[in-house]
Length: 417
Image (cartoon, rainbow, N blue to C red):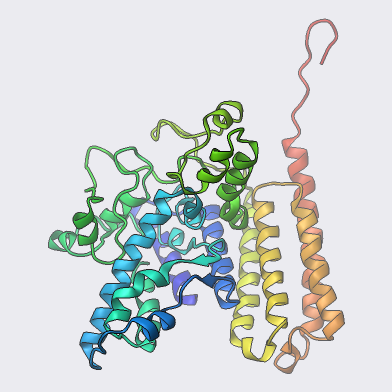
């Protein structure tokens, strides 16, 4: 996490120095917050694999490749093949798009948006696609080593500062290829699903080169309109649930889940229209008013959240179960609360109170913060002070925002307002 944060800030500095800043402050905080929720969810193990790789290996191994570089090469290639199809499925079917929408929700393209990862993917189909590795008997330990390396290798190309890369454009996924993938231009939609090697797209007919005459415009066609990563993760699912409920035809209620992404029953779409960007070159990016003080406070909250989660990860074995789930709940409440404030929602104070009351209750019940007093003997007064100050500051911001957003009534002829 510190390395990713440093690289994100470095890109921000580089863009500012070159006069081409691609990192908006509040968008960056939202992206980093999304990364926090994702790693928390993953550490808590809140997902179910339909089929595990270990099960496939046990039942389908035909041979066992010898130890050495070939084993790791095969594992990497199979992971990349599986990654292509998992990625493509997420884009092409309504139900699975909900698991991936968060990654495309930023209307910017930068290293920070790479950290926007799903917390809504409770059902994992990825293991099924690792069948080729299982047939060759690639050990589970090799997959466990190669998988995170394969994931981290997808971080660097989320940038606008690297242009074309010569002959490498024909072999690997480059920033140019991935800019196409994140664009909402009609020419670029649902293209370039590859994760490391670009030849999968060329092989399966989904490749699109970045065109000089068509600059990519980033985001999703049904814009998220929020900085809150928890909300973004479930927006599409909530729309599917409502559409299935409202559909008159029972067939539509069931088929909506596996129809192409964006499909809605005709009667529901007519009666309950949803805003969709039709012209990628003429729409207003999500950018609610944010004073310097609000932006500074959002950074304070994000920093505090990173401190909380760093302690969590550093002491997760000692915290144990069910403590880790209580801690995870606190992290989610914290992210939800300060991103609601970034959205200028009045409910921010309610979520802030819930978060801080939860934190104080933990302190009083445990007479500690998950064993932190062994390291910081003064942790309790520090955290109580933080919870109280945080509540007061958020209440002040909510009050100020309400005053700023209050529109004067217009006087109409006839003495009416």
